[in-house]
Image 1: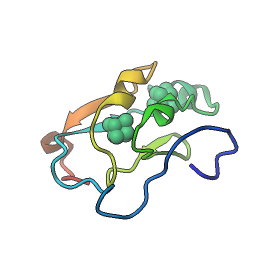
Image 2: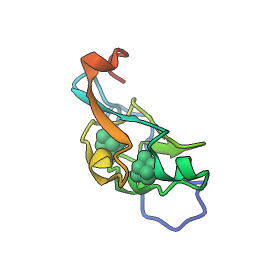
Image 3: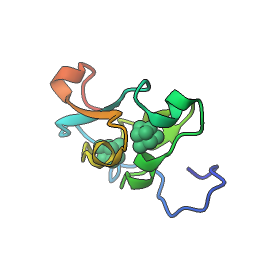
Length: 99
Ligand code: SF4
Ligand code: SF4
């Protein structure tokens, strides 16, 4: 998130085989905007999910957006979200295939 004015140590994904997730991920995080604390309040999002993601693959527009090309499905974002807005869904139930 290079454009983010906040000082924060975080990596950003870049193109390349080393970072690109293949078809091995078995679950993907799905965000429920209605449950995202800040999105509900019409304020800037808390970004805890972004801060904890080890792959730097969560971006923000109106709310959190996950880049499934790089998400590894570790589930940390879902664990850390204070409002339970992120659910880990099996890939076969997500219906969109691997990222
Ligand atoms: S599941 Fe892991 S890699 Fe994917 S967005 Fe959440 S924290 Fe990042
Ligand atoms: S951690 Fe949860 S409440 Fe905070 S921005 Fe991410 S999805 Fe929204």
